[in-house]
Image 1 (tube, rainbow, N blue to C red):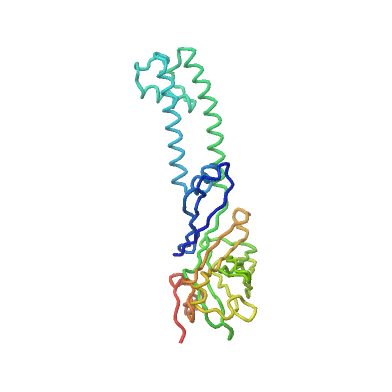
Image 2: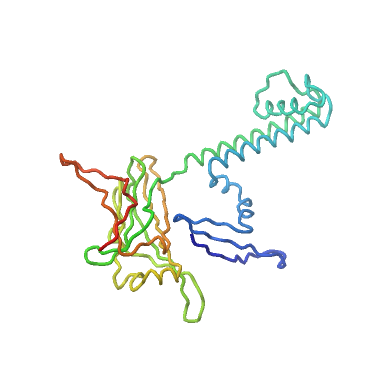
Length: 306
């Protein structure tokens, strides 16, 4: 697991305020952003936050907002005694459940407003209910309708000979029983460099692949980048990649035939995830009657080269 620290120079009205520090950790081939001020920036965009958090967090926030809203209206109903008919005097539970019935437009009839103040609160709560249901429905639909890719990448990448040329190799597999049409993969090498003027920077290099597109990505895809004199990997060693904190970013995109929408998947291989002079275990086999099959039990397995 590697960690980068980025100091964001955000413009603020008060220059004396401390600037947030953002930590980027690369773990299990994925980026994890942590640090001071990060969650503050997320909460400034609640719509994006509600679309990106896991379903457990989304449901927890929904329940929390629902309970808080009903509790606030219950306290407002209790502000005027005897505003709700048939409710126990000073009972928070009766006021809370009356708010639930009003917010959900249930209206059992056992509890009902009997003062002008209570009717005004019921009107306000009904408007809040209309807006809240519309927002919740839109967010739930957006989360359900958002296309996602179920693509698995090999835990490690290897560098070994292919057709007599040192080659950067990794595997990808489609975990769904459908096809990803017009799939394409792009590879980028990221590494720290210092310019002639002494400025440190993070440089990106696109890596040329033997086959970067396929009309149909169904089962497995072995991605190959030949390391020739035109490759950014040319002349590199495991020590030099680690010193430059190099990493390879994989970006896969295609059209999901089920929903006919573009899907994306990405993965990152750090220098520690690249094994030199290794090869992948063969996962394609043939039965006695001539049928071929794929054994995904060895999808991530590698063997050292002699």
